[in-house]
Length: 142
Image (cartoon, rainbow, N blue to C red; front, side):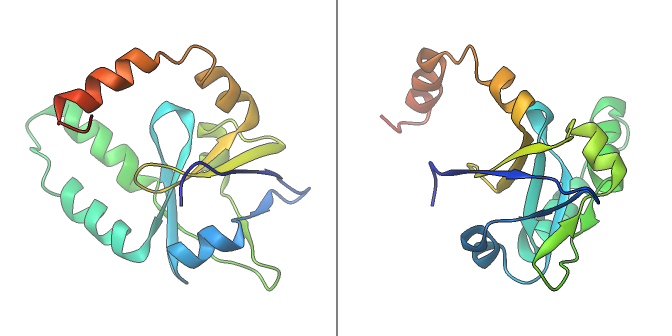
C-alpha cells in the first residue's frame, strides 16, 4: 500500500500510534531508526535483520561510510507498544526528526516513514518530477 499518508500527533508523553494498516504490514516486532531527508524509518523485524547485516558489511576503512552506518545502527530502537497501540519515541529520534507535535506517517518506497509535518512540507515543497522520470528511466521502469 502506497500513496496514503496519515496525520497524527504526539501526545503529552511523546507517544504516537502507527496506523493499524501499517502495523499489520510491519508485524508484531518492528524497529525505528534515523532515515534520510530528516524522517524516521520503521522496519519490520525481517527488514531490521537485513539492514543490520548490510550495515555490518560496510568497509571500516571508508570513514564516511562507517560513520553513517554507525549512526543508523546506534539509533535503532525496538518499538514497544502499550495496550492502546502507542509507541514512545526516544528523545534522540524525536530530536533527529524534529518531531514536536504534528506527525505524518506514510508507507514509503522501502519502509514506513515518520515525518514531522513541518519537515514533510519543507522536504516536498520543490519536488522535480523530471528527476524522478530520469531515475526511473535509468532502470527501465518507464
